[in-house]
Length: 129
Image (tube, rainbow, N blue to C red; front, side, top):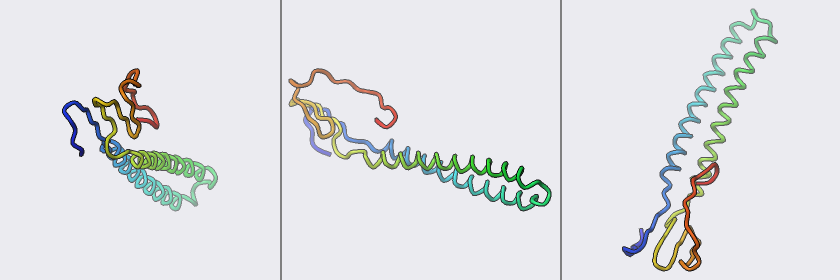
């Protein structure tokens, strides 16, 4: 951390919230993977046990629909996990915002106070925070 004067406000980048989101998405993805494996094992066992009793087309359709739901659910959590990891990789290091006597610095861009008309905080939204 850098030394700052008492007349400066320095806000560093904080990757902790994004890191927590990555950990939550990793746990959710593992949970969905375990659920997918259990679904495959159960459906395979039921199919093997009842394959001589049921008409193959009807029960196979139900099995494929159930399996498809599990696969899609896992795929969605995998994509969300990859997006969270990409977001974590893009979090900067060092100073995010610096307000001081010379002016304002946001990320790598700086402006003198004479060039600043106003400052506003904008809520994060999908893909931006």
